[in-house]
Image (cartoon, rainbow, N blue to C red; front, top):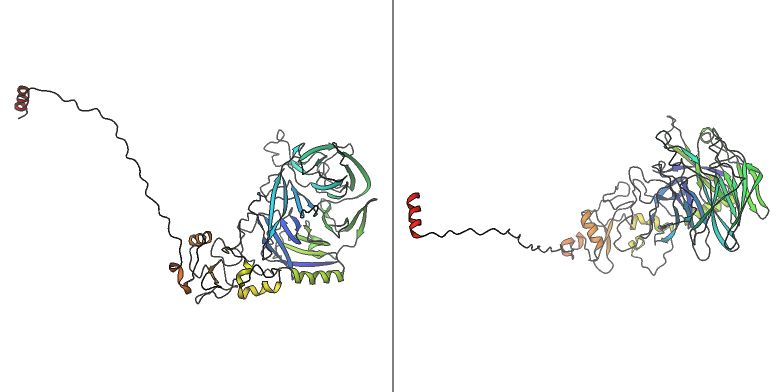
Length: 534
């Protein structure tokens, strides 16, 4: 068991209480934040990379057919292991937005694809529920149960605002515990039903929910009614019978006084480690526990905690999440101490044995990605840079038929032969002094492909003095481009300006005027009038 301090690289302000850590395709994801400081992040999901004692974040993009996933804090998150040919995914229900809006939506988050540079793309889909649907809430749990070859999901606990009829200007933002109802729904048809048990009299939130087959164990939790955390433990038994499910509740004699705890899995079996949380209003829970679920029930045993640092011991709050099997990411706010330079302190808690930890570190150094340029980066909705129809790994002239497996050495050589090459005689872009010039740039300068010769080469758009409008125009077209050293933009087939035909407008109709009345006069009368006017 080790406790390793981490140095956040321009990202300590992104991790806040209520965030969630997810695991998809071997990558740790941070969910529930707005985005980079002073800049907006359309996804609110970041990849967490821990290497050489540093904590770095990278914005994750979504597929074009994904639905919007708002940044939700303290939602109910349920991980679905791969089954029936379906990849691993997550169900996210409820949660609280940074604007204090409480959600009641249900989202399914899964991996869409991985690019040639191992860039992860996610897909989000909102699912609808019908029937007795759980209302908007946060601090609750969602668990998956399996019985008789069927799968269903259990929702329990949480907090929400007071009913609309009881809300006034004085208690508008006051929250209460949701009624102690158990909701059961299935994803195939979206049907949801609510159940009440006499054993459950008060609502609770921020508890621990562990499931194995058709049993769900609810451990601890915070009760707003008494502002306490009693050592409570009960078991929900779910039988998915044909037509009508059967649910039962049993109170157990032993439990833990805990809320807002961090849970990590220790293997394929139902073995877990519980760390952190609070056991009273002003006291953190410094102990660790192992929880084992088997055919006989639940078994809770104490576990020796790591050697806490003074910052952790004297802090009033802490939070975090699982950073993989047998490891946790722990954050401790500095809580306004003027002598401290950091806003928060981050630690990686590893429960592996020394031998296993060394092997894991070696494997991580071989398989992890090298991320060296996250400073002052901003995420984009569609892509990080403009590649003009080519993948980043093709910058070196590689083809699709070659081996596209990731290699850390290729990532390191990218600084010499990738984005930071000397593209022309006047190129002065430097890795250490470069700053984003176009709004489409995130971590690396935008590049365009010069089609001279058979192989061609890549050049920086900034070195070619291209305007952002022209850069976007070239990215949407399919004409060849030639850099200044090989003919320049006028010689290449520049997209001609669109000829706008003048619009022929019909003349306005003149209003009909009454014709002037002609007066008939004799010659005698005309002569009389002439004499008068003369």
